[in-house]
Length: 234
Image 1: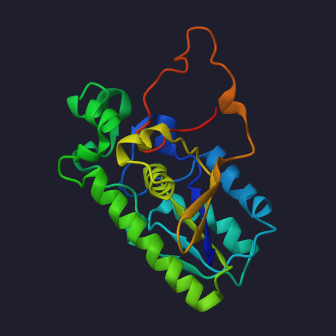
Image 2: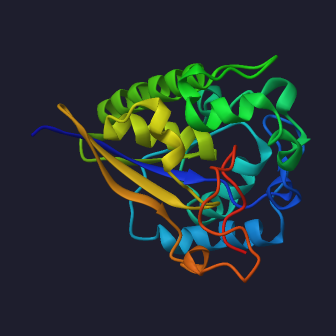
């Protein structure tokens, strides 16, 4: 089966909005917190054996901060910015507490029927997925033309964007994408071929802390997907 480039998807490191329980969306000035900066600092070693043709980033600060240590470690690695892998435009939901949004009737649609969900003043989840998938298809072709079919490239983006790309790669209906989890600074890899993509890594952090059972009185395992991706393991 004819090869095409392999895509490494990195979610940005944990942000100040993640720990505050706020849906940041495209709010400017959202930076990595202390743990997020440490996650970003560890990224070059985690990817040390992978030759990267190019790095593509969402324009938001938290993604650019996540890639900074990797770019410092690889001075020849070219960075491109693509607005098509920007965070979902949550519109009027942006900057609000997730706990508060949980009472909004729209949240049930976002969780159970996301293909029908559109954010007031923002975009729909369908539109978000369509632009992200279009970006990947475009970059696959560009990377293959410039670097060959066996090339590997990286995109640093956001939780819901990455989940929607994984759903596309798996041939899953968008209504099932909330079953996917990608933690901050996790690595997901999709190998593309002429006939189908292969998901070869999903949400790999090398840290299994999030699998630890919650303390008594905690939220337990039955909980909704965190819009925007959540804060990951403590």
